[in-house]
Length: 100
Image 1 (cartoon, rainbow, N blue to C red):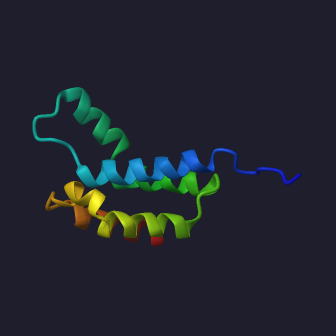
Image 2 (image 1 turned 180 degrees about the horizontal axis):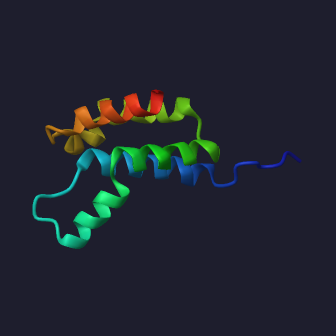
């Protein structure tokens, strides 16, 4: 029997997707002060890259993160997210941050 070293790998992969999408969407203009505070605390580029690096330590490969970013960039199911004019530059910025 082979041991499962990364038991929550699928969860971490889903978490990477959620973090990337949250960073790409940004914050709505009519956000409450609570939402603004949470966005400032958890959705900056540095905190998003730290969360993704943590997920990489727990079984998600850098290749999977790159594939997910490519999927978000090109797949039709994410077209709503890409409609925001700041979304693609944010994705590029996050990709540069993770590759450095």
